[in-house]
Length: 272
Ligand code: ARG
Image (cartoon, rainbow, N blue to C red; front, side, top):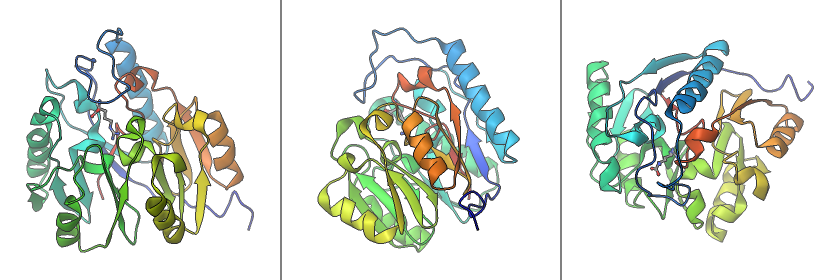
């Protein structure tokens, strides 16, 4: 078996939110600068391209209607956590994004999901809660509360590995780590503490270490279907590493959405 045949894709279901009202009017992470102009039309075309890439890979994309006045709602990954059809709603740290929690939870109610749970602790959905197959990786330190772990185990019945994030530029776990398949992940070591690095090393059999310059273009904000990895096209070094490990990297330009600290994974919520 060669490297390029050992990686197998499975089709996925994603939820996305068109950035019709995207802009940067507040700053809740170090990437956001309300004084830097944002081109909403450009953000929309970058987002449309991402949606097309998913469709071309055979994935199903559903959409939630954007709400005027919620410019970060495009970052669907933060809207909830969905595992085995069960939905844990999001509870946002900052007031600017708090109304998004109810908007997403109501979408799941209308879509017929039988188990939709209101969260008791602050958790920013798949931004910090990453399902890795045998366990949930839960980032904390900037946004989600460490205490969200108990709620996650109780609802989903899966062990939780808590990971402290230590660099404010990598404020959500999905900006510093991407799960590529059940045994493989790519991550930025400097975004974690010693305990976190050790936990990741013992969980995954293969760990790809991203370089500074790839992390700094949010290269780890990527989505894998087991074979294809959709990531920011500026992360050229990481693309080489992924190819060497048998994956097929697909670059997309999310530069406009990066002005809010987001990339392709932030725009994508997996419906499991
Ligand atoms: N401006 C948004 C925030 O700071 C960006 C969210 C990015 N989402 C993500 N899953 N990392 O909340």
